Length: 495
Ligand code: NAD
Image (cartoon, rainbow, N blue to C red; front, side):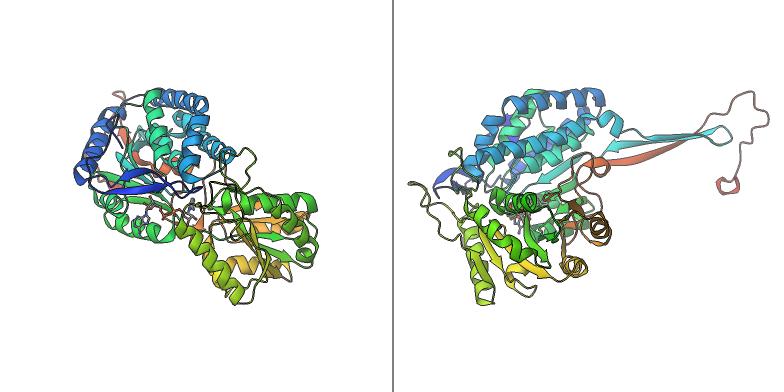
């Protein structure tokens, strides 16, 4: 935990095992922070906010610039910390830190992003202006799949806007977030401005109920996301809840063949499919499936399944035995329900010493229809499902009928088809020949429908809005030279 600038060992008697996904061995234990420790974290963040909000926004941005420098300096160390507990390949872990740094670059622009508006002479010698002010103590709850990046979606924007934040990382891989917060302290963020507590339901519910917490940023699965949104908003807090996904890619027969095969395989199996924007549902239009499937299978089969210590690893393990069991269950259900396994990655061979890990190699399932479990549930593993559509209209219909709206992509060389898709598809993040269209942080991460609850997204201008409230000042300073100032007017009478 980090409370008031100090890395501490909890006094709890409830500990959760953290296992190495590559071996299945227990490598750490994470505490359920006690109620007293959590209270101390909220109080310390509240105290820190009182002075931090008065620090010039330029100075706050400068500290972020220093933080950015330290993250670059320590990328390898942090990536190792991610890979050890999350299982990601080393390059993927480094890439995820870089994606988080881009949010910091956005936060460094806070002096401009925070600017309000002003209008002179809205009445007789009356001026009006608006500011955006910080909320106070904010909170963040993060998932296992991007242990540092999702935290970096949250606290850099929140604190550079003048708030403080209490973060609760995933209990499955908590250490790297603590390391990243420790580095923020080294950059000059005062004690208490970012605190870190640990745990599961009790910690989450304490965040949802605590009167000092003004907002909650959540990234994770549907159950937790819906619960946190309902409980947090019922308590009067702002909540942004990024949840699950089923991201479809439409492949038109006119697409650029080689680049599309590469893009599909990379986006479907990279990060072992444990990306909320992984493109895992491929809708082939016309004869594109028949022309591509062998090439896709060949490329997917060539990916090396290994642990993060192997520099040639392409696909790491999935996070837990529970995840692996779910993935196996869904593949088996697809077989039972009439789908075909084009590439079966179950029970792959891995190098000696890794037999106890949660391994599954790239798997391609074809002939999938919307009524199958593997289509209805989020698989969250290196498993891609293939569907067919007769036309672009039919493919768009499939996507728009799916309850999720996180991301989607089309592969085509036709500008007309791309424009039609862009206009008609009902998803928040859309790629045109871009397989994982996660927006760069000057734009908001715009998951919609079943993938999001709330009304203001992460980062971009929306992120700044989420972490601030507006104050509008109307002022009247009549000049003495003006004659006959009328001191008594009914406000609604003047125009
Ligand atoms: P998760 O929902 O299991 O856990 C996320 C956080 O919520 C953790 O900190 C966990 O401790 C807490 N939590 C879990 N269950 C809870 C419950 N019932 N009540 C209260 N708190 C609970 O998610 P995960 O397995 O860590 O992450 C994978 C999921 O996250 C996938 O569904 C993925 O699509 C989603 N995700 C979404 C985005 C996005 O931006 N939309 C990004 C990354 C991951």
